[in-house]
Image 1: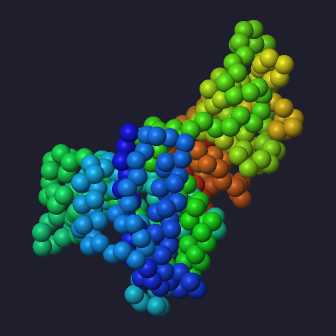
Image 2 (image 1 turned 60 degrees about the vertical axis):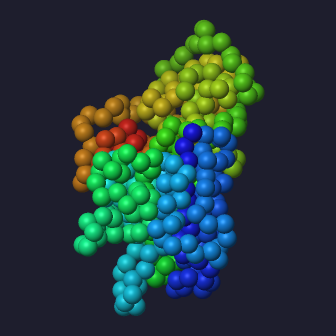
Image 3 (image 1 turned 180 degrees about the horizontal axis):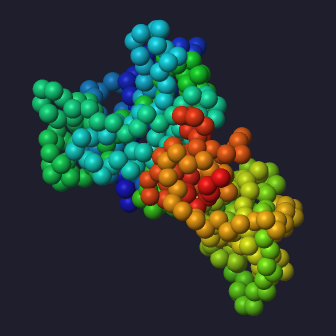
Length: 381
C-alpha cells in the first residue's frame, strides 16, 4: 500500500493561459481528480489524498506539502503548467519539467519516467513538447529547497539524511507544458487530453511500485480464469511479423505463457492496439486455437486472423541486440510500445536515440521526443 498526496496548484481563475478558457488553477484541479481516479482504479493498494477539497481553496504552499508529511505519504505531486513573462518568448518556451527535492536524489528515476510519460501523450499532438528533465532549485538564503511546496513535503529537511528519514520518498512539482505556448495550452484546455495525461501518470506510478490496477479483460481465447493444459503444445517454426487489426477500445492481450485466461495476462506490457506490429518466431497450438511467440521474449499473442495478420519474411533477422544501443544511434522500431506499456504511432521508418538509461531509451526526430521505449523493442538501423 502506498499513499499519494496530490496538490492541484493554485486556485480558481489563477494564471490565464493564451488559449481561450484556460486557467492553470482550474486545469490542475480537474487533472488532480482524474489522476486520483486512475490511481485508485482496479486496486486497493493506493490511497490518494488531496491537499484541498475545492478549486477555490488556496492553502499556503508550505501547508500543501505538509499534508504529505502528516499522512506519511510515499509520493507527493504538485500539479502545474509553466509560463514565461516575456510575450516575445511565448512560442519559444515549451516542454515538460519535473522538479524534485534536492535531498531525495533517488527520486530522479521516477521523475524522468513521469516526464517522459507526459511527453508521450502531448508530443504527437503539439509537435513541440519534450522533456526538459528532472530539475532541482536551491534557496540561496537557507540552502534548502527553493519551492515551499517541496520544502513542506520533506518537512524542511536540509540534508539527504533528514529527508530520507521521512516517509515521503518522492516530492515533485510537475510542469505540464507551458500555458503561454499556444500549442501546449490548447492541448491542456481539452479535458480528454487531461484524462490521457492522468492515465499516463497513474500508470507510471503504479508500474514503478509494482502495483497492478486490476486484471485486463480477456479479448480472445477462452474465458477469464480458464487454464488450458500446456501439454502437448505442437509448434511450427515461423519467421515474420504480425500486425494487430483488432479495433476494440481495450485492445488485445499479451500472454506471459502459451495458455488462455486472465490469470496469464502480461499486465505490465498489455494491452496492445490496432496498428502495432510484432516480430514472431513460432506458432503454438493452444487448445483448439493458436498463438504466436514474440521474438522480443515479451510473451505470446493470438494467431486468430480476426485479430491479427501475419506476414512471413525470409529476411527477418534476430533482433537480440548485436551491440549496445547508445544515444545518437539511428534505429528502427520493432514494436511500437512505450516503456510504460502504452502505444504510439509510427510516422517514420527511422528514429534517433536521444538518451539511454539502463534498458530504457528515449527516441525522437531531431530534438522532439516521440516515445520512451525498451531497448529490446528497437534495433540499430
